[in-house]
Image (tube, rainbow over all chains, first blue to last red):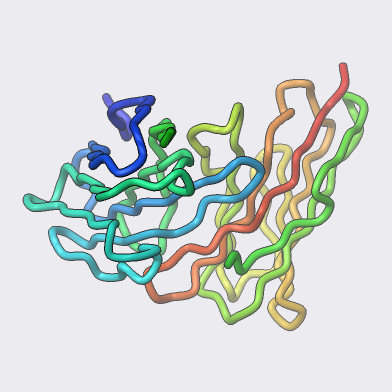
Length: 113
Length: 110
């Protein structure tokens, strides 16, 4: 009876490295969101998936960020050539519909040294 | 940049008192949602109010929506220490984005 899970819970990496963050949504939820949250701020929208396709990726800050959801369930957020400014908590959420209640995972805290 | 803005940024009250938080947003919305977050990690959905609704209740929560003023308020009645958390409004604009505000940090003193 799982909620949304995210792995790893914490990730420390060095500037310039590549990282992958994973999200397991609630089974049957077709809508999946990625957000980024900095200290003292609200979640910042990154990308939205409906099924396998990215319906809206307008929140991705630049082309170092990419996300996939190949089978319409698990999603991976990929960050290339990480920078110190990428340090934040990355949150994933899923919902039954795009307009409905979102169920959030616990987040991955990314620290770029 | 965030579309929603919460007011106040921080609120400290005694247990048993009511807490009111306000949210303003910039564009037309399909619905507006309120979330709670403890310890800076996962958010928990509290209540959703649609653009054609003016007020909604859920337990000790009361939400109002004024689309003409592009604002919403969340009232928590008879607050408890366990209500201590950050509260965010989230505007769903009808595309695919949900835009969160910066949040109100509520501290309820026992």
